[in-house]
Image (cartoon, one colour):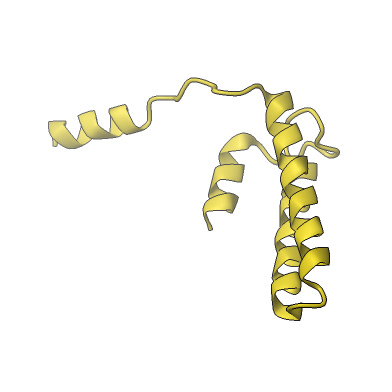
Length: 88
């Protein structure tokens, strides 16, 4: 059991912040723009690919707007929930 406790403590140790919250918000909105531009580019070639890009861009935009960092509009989600949403 002590080995399991040690492993959990190591895994749960917080990671240092690699980028600022403002930079994270900018990267998120650039990602949304790239999804939407990809949808426009694929529209005539493959409607299925364009629809997938639109859905992905919309989901990323919704999460970005509801995130608790500069650039989010409603500040509903906290960063721990974002990791769960993105990993799903």
